[in-house]
Length: 387
Ligand code: GLA
Image (tube, rainbow, N blue to C red; front, top):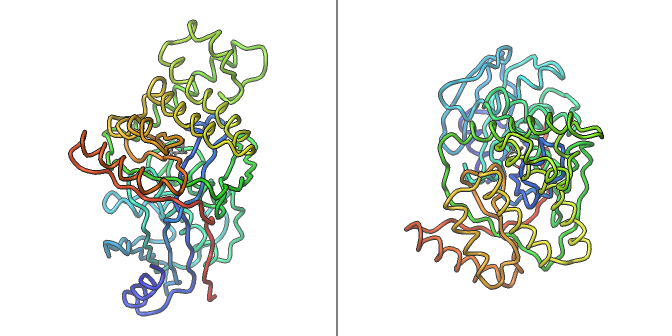
C-alpha cells in the first residue's frame, strides 16, 4: 500500500513526498464509553491503518487528496475552516487547526492519504487519519508534539469539525499500540501500559456494516447522561466525585432509585465497565482467557440493558457467539449503534468460528458479515522524512 500511494503521490503532484507517516486503527477490547468518564480501557492498535504522505507547496495553498477516491480538497493553510462536501477532509483540516496552536505552519502542502481500515466499522479510521496526518505535518513543519497532545489534537478535530464529543481512546490506542500487546489506559492520569497477549489468543473483528441513523447525536446524548449522573453523585456522595470513574457499583445501586431513571440507567454501563476492565486485567495477568471472555459477554449485555448502544446486527453476532464452540467472549467494540463485534478465540478455532458466525448472520440478515483476524500491532509512526 505504501508503494502504491508513493507512486500515486508522485504522479499526481509531479514531485515525491518529503514525509510519510502511518497510523493504525484500533479495537476496543473491554471498557465501553469509559474514556470520557475517566475510567480504564483495554484496547489494541490493529493491523489495518492509513498512510499520509506530504510535501511542502510553493505557496500557502494546501492540496489534500484521498488516494482511494482520487478526490481533492484545497484550502488555505491560514484558514483551516470545515468543508461541507468531501467531509473526510475535515479530519485533516481540524488537525491543521490544532497544530497551529502548537507552532508555525508557514507554507501550504501537497498531501495524499490511503488506508485499508473499513469505514464505519467502528475501527477508528477517522482517528487513524488524524494521527497519521498530525505526525506527518508536525514533521513537515519541524514541530515537536508530545504524543498525548497529538491525541488531543485529533480529539479536538472530532469535537469541532465532525461534531462527535468523543473521548481520547481512539487516538491514544493508535499512538501507543504495540505488537502482540493490549494497551491499558487510565483515562484520568492518561497513563498507558502495555500488556503482552499470549500466543493463545486471537481476535476476530466481525463487521456488521450497519450504521444506524443519528449515531453521532446518540453518542453525544449518552455522554450528556453520564455527565449528569456524575453531577448527581458529586452532590449525593460524601467523597469527591469528578467523573463516573469515582462511583462504585454499590453506590450506584444505593442511589439509582432516587435519580432520573434514564440518567441512572445510562450511568450503570460505564460504572460497570470500569470494574470489568480492572477485573479483566487481573484475569489476563493470570492467563485466564475464559474468565476474560466472560467479562466481554457481560460488557455486551450491559450495552444492551443499560446503554442501549447495540443494535440487532451486533446482537445477532454476540448471541450466536455465545453458542459457538471456541468463542471465549464477544462484545460490540467502540461507540456502538452499528459497526463491529470483537470476538476472542483461540487461534486454532479462528477459521471455524468465523465460518459459523457468518452462517448465523446470513440466516438472520440475508447477507454475511465481514470477518477479519485482528493482530494487536505497533502504533503510529513517521516512517520516512527526507527534509
Ligand atoms: C468511540 C469514541 C471513543 C470511545 C468509544 C466508546 O470510539 O471515539 O472515544 O468513547 O466510542 O468506548
